[in-house]
Image (cartoon, rainbow, N blue to C red):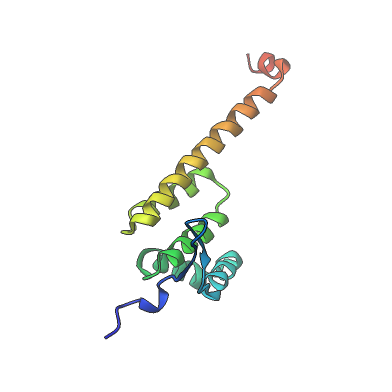
Length: 129
C-alpha cells in the first residue's frame, strides 16, 4: 500500500560530522518546468500553479508554485495577497515560509519608500506647497 504523494517525499543527505542536512538527494525537474510555464504566463499554467499551490502532496512543489506566481507580480500588494493565501493553504512549513516572505517584502517596501522620500529635493516640497 502506498501513501498518497509518497513519491514526492524529499530524501535528504546528512553531514554527520557537521550535524546538518547536506542537501536534497532527489531533486525533481517538475519544479523547474512549472516555474518556466508560469513565467511564460499561459492561463493553464497559472491555473495549474494555483491548484498545485493548495493541493500538491509535496510542500516543496507547493512553495515553488507560490514563488513562481509571486515572481510574476510587480505590485507589492499583489505579492502580499499571494503570500497571505499561502499562509492559509493548509501546510505548516509553507505557512511559515509565506509569513517570512511577507515580513521581508514589507521591510523592503518600507525601505524603498524611505529611500524615495530621502531622494525628494526641497524644490519638490516647495512645488507641492
